[in-house]
Image (cartoon, rainbow, N blue to C red):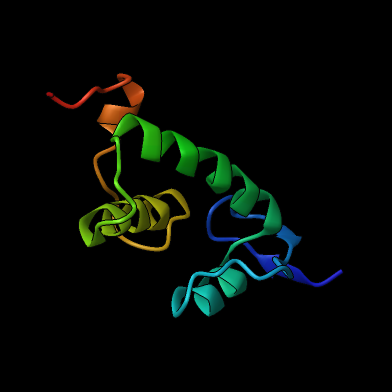
Length: 92
């Protein structure tokens, strides 16, 4: 088992070995995030997509999910997640 010092949980954890299909970000994620925290993000990603009603077919939707991912994994600047906390529904 390869270990990584995770920036998300702050502990030593198992490294991600499976492909995660994140393009340029993949190397950074694999070097800084443990497998456990990545699995937590995968569950959170579904919630982000549903709560924000993200259209992944649009670049803006993909960027929103990427920003949320970087914030969740502590790889970038924090973003406003209050919409997730309040079960936000966008105006229709």
